[in-house]
Length: 430
Image: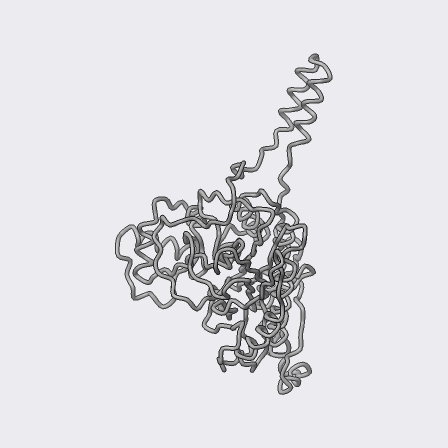
């Protein structure tokens, strides 16, 4: 989930929907019920109607898809030991001793429970995105895509969006010039098109340890977006390689910028330089807090702050063929309760009730309107806007570059162990 460096004014509930050249969905997204038993009974009763009726029943049966139940990730790892991510040495020479230091390895073992929480979340993330990558196709409603991903997270975590384990933040499904923070609200009519470029940003948490990782999906058969996707992926890998204990944030941003902006793509005979989206950043991650204070730039910005031992970072980069700068656009869906606001009071009885529900279900984890509605909330928008205006809840509207441009994103979560860094969300896919 991207960290931004822009001011986002309060958005009222009724604003324009994102215009991304999409059409209305043809289905309501509800899974079909398995009525095989009824088909068999009908076929037996109507056997005298001949082979035509029998063939019709068989065809009907074959068209029904059984919904495969997702098994909890704990069932695959009953000993509670989950796969490790990709290990990498630290880049600075002053850190070379860490690899062989017995003391550093001892300190790392003291945090085993913490690391296993991240690894469990990362394994859930890998399985969920594999399911998403093999299932998402053009023509699907964005709401159906979000439900597919989020229900998979809930199933593998064996927790229905609780504070113990489950969804770490709303599923980002931003299309085309929209770079981040779009997820469908209830009633959204947008459908994925075959020429769309979609950023899929998925968050999984276990005991508040959030795994934040994102990738980009396209379906253009001519490879239209291959270059921008390669540029962003390589820029992200560069950021991961450069990151480490005592590394200055500016140096990471400078390395990312150099790689990203060495690429350009061509469209209709026109060369389009690929730019870093300079006001989007990676970030460090705290327990139950997705943006925990430090921002990892994707350009050289002069920030001499250093990464420190024991910290967790989301290294993410965004490339664009537009201005390389994003601003709020469209109806807001993402929200999170601010920290350090205990002294602020809800301005009305309804907003007080809503705030308590937010605390009980999400704490300081980000959430979206659909998640509120799953808790039973109804007619809550006025109270929600009150909480936003009073600084108790922060809103994160979709952020977009200029219309007609293309944006892409890749992201991984890294753990700065005392002796090495671990790219915990790394998989075979990216």
